Length: 277
Length: 280
Image (cartoon, rainbow over all chains, first blue to last red; front, side, top):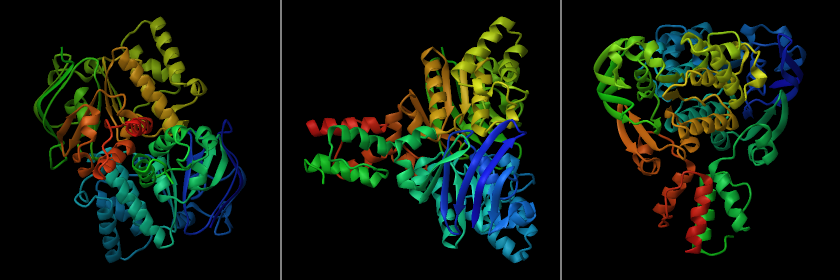
């Protein structure tokens, strides 16, 4: 379990990124952290694996204060994938990159090869194993950075903007991989602006603005709140906007429409039956 | 007059086993707003690099065919010269920022082109205002969030007043409202005459403004036309491109025997078409 208790952090004492953040994440949850640029999302997850230590307040990992834990100890529990893959990749082949982390964690060579192969396959990277990450496209490099951390199957996965540069198919693959890991009791935390990705795959959403948590609860309740959308510089999904526009003419259209199948039924009802029930 | 022309252009990076671009033929006219999309690794970034000469002058490799930018063959032109015509915004903004604060970053390009100081000052203030960079004015680019860096990189490129803006996923790190701000600015500049080529996965944000949508797959152009005509094709989903949800709903309704009057690109448009259909 991860607990943050009234955490403050400012960069060089100038720019305050976190202003009293308290948050609990249980084992096995899938949580999305959303918010505007500069809201403190990345600073928050860097506290979860010890890259940053709180200047005020506390962060507890399994009940232990992170001030007393080394980065190495924390890295075994929490795997963090950065927003920019170039901050993370440094070896001359995709295979070496993925193997590097696994070796450090002391897996057997057989297990290393198994995990490496299956993670690459899941992320559509089979065939790139011997390539240098720096010859790959931005989207592909991003998936290599994800593969390195996902292969180690840490108990907690914290991913900063994992869907950037990914096409629809790759996003689906990534979601499936995250759901599979979550089934194995792994906690999955994503920082993202991708509201559709969150609605489809994350039951809980934490909304941040200006270094504070402004809403925390079920994704459907947090993201159907217009105030949260505004504060966090988000945008409603197209289907929600369509439903809102329809509701102005047809009051029978229900609120909180977030999925394609819902809007499809609403439209079929409007066009076929006259009134929608 | 054509601004950019690819003539049977192919390119293979030195280290790669396969071609990044295969026999590309493409004409871009002044004033167009083109969105390029396709699965990751399909050649979109290479296409951008070929327009400002980074391919083949910086990224070396095998070249076939030609790219002409403002009638200059990129093979025989310096990147510095091409950069004044085609302004490129990179996918990862941290690879692009070189100075210590926002003002210097925006002024850096025009200073190197010996633009008048008065004019530089004007461009800097204009872009700081338009891109809402005021709160970042004195911040070091490396202390900024990814999204903030992206806005600064965009400003630095626009300060060069390029004829064509080539932007490789310029909003990927941005929250939706900041992304909208950038996209509105791009649409605005396009209306004022700047040609735009934008690489983007989030077609729900850009399809409505674009005059043309190009779909790439495995180094080739596989569809090219008005956004509605391209997005309605099954090909998009077959190659893994995510089409706007409103368009997806249109296609799904069609399968169920309901055909709306037009292919919608936004949620509002979808709602309007449903109202029309209901009144009919």
